[in-house]
Length: 227
Image (cartoon, rainbow, N blue to C red; front, side, top):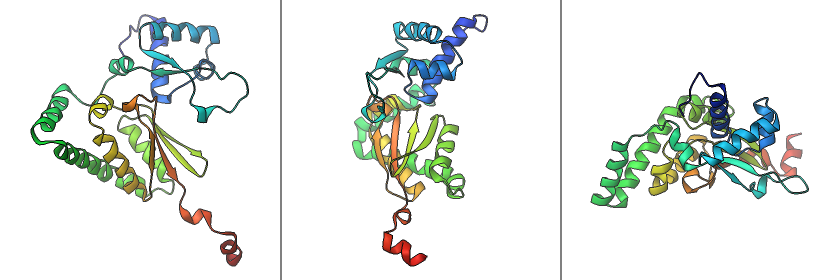
């Protein structure tokens, strides 16, 4: 998003939007704490961004609700808001993919998506394979590629979150891109993964669940034998 450097208010507004883009759905309290602002100050910017269609206010995901009482609503980047930020694709690439689809059918689009996923695997191979914490290494790699990714423990595994998707609009029309990308993650990490949500389908964050390696769940009898 372009803002005037001479206007501190616009710079702060842009910072609020970018924080949500990079961190994913956030409450007003969390944003105020992260940006060192007062709740009143952050809400003023949030109201302005919602009025302009940059942000949307939504109910929090049920899995994230841990407190009693009415949960605070979260703010997410809208499709219009994402368009305000730079994307890594251009109109020519989008048009080309549509042309391939109309001329050759879905199998050619799938082939394209698979080739793109293979390129992701090759580019990330050294960085991820040499790391003991592969999910975190993959998140770092994806961040470099423009996906603003992060990873955190969740239940019996890890959730990989991509807070930005440079090809969200294309993937909304061609889901093969998301499907092949998920397969690439499984190949890179050496384990089955499950895609839980995608920005292309209207979710605030692309979320992939990565189960912990099986050796971490040895049976009690197996652990006793090792003692």
